[in-house]
Image 1 (tube, rainbow, N blue to C red):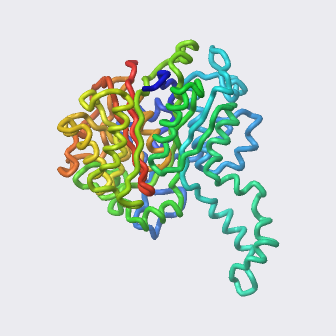
Image 2 (image 1 turned 90 degrees about the vertical axis):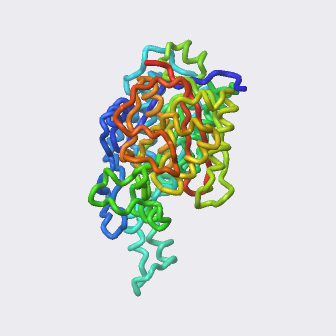
Image 3 (image 1 turned 180 degrees about the horizontal axis):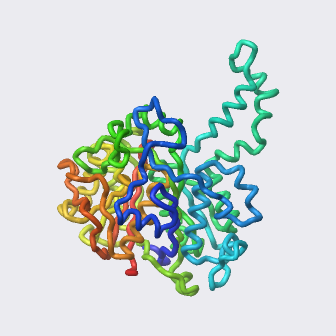
Length: 445
């Protein structure tokens, strides 16, 4: 039983289909895809040459003028997180340090920064390969081979002294908390695709137990780099037969699902104690009521064929929310498009929802957005919150016929008019196998 009620008051999303929750939601409603041939680098030579790309971010639009120099030491993942944090704070009309200094403060009192926390999921940040390669080239010996002594005496001097600070996973939360003056508890979660859900769940606990009044939480990651593509390719997780038709590559739960696609993006959400939100007159999208987490002990790299970890996480979330499976009216799954993972997730849902698992509507959006790792869960959740708030649920792109092994009621035909009272969202890590589930009650818009 949670001590304080926790509500959702802000949604910030940076994704391949748009920037800002309104743009992302409209793109999903219209069935637009952000998956295309990769342009950030030359993917020729890779089996899969498609991905979800955000495009260049103008960081001066997301930070105060006094902080612009710091954007020079932001890796791509950090940029995504900082941009999404700005969108979330602005959407929630918070008077944070950033918005006040930018002259965009809302008509509410400045929040107590010591009661403002942050929990942000991060992935394995890829080093700037061009920058690193240029420095390594200066450390070659006379034979052309890498010389560790020359690296120490000359090569390292060709990297900025702050180089390492661009690639530490906790730097996402570091920059976000500094920019918005969030002085409460701050944590970084690095659990793959489950990171966002686990970060949101921890923020939920922090507020409900009275340790904070407000938290910014979610995750960000860019897998859109040569190392990210190589890693997923070697693990045989990618769809490789759609280079000539990128938009159709990722097909969650479809009978023709053959793999996922790499992507980049961020989702950050403002959670707030109900009494705090009401006092400042905040818009409330919905109430978070349940959180559950588990681990797949079957394998570190492969899903449990029976979906037991998903089932455990969902069961814990249901117990936490003090509701029954029959009360779930919409499911937002992880839905990566990897056949074994889709089947595992579906079986986990069947194990907890029973016969209703074949009936309750399911909306999976990675067909349009791709898999951006640590940010994927929060992007899904933010879109779900907006969709349920508006009463219209975007379809699941690239789903034509549901795989009989999954046997889920995947929404595949146009936007669906639906105002669910209770929504379940699940997530799982492709490596490490952490699993999480969140349950929320939307507020009608």
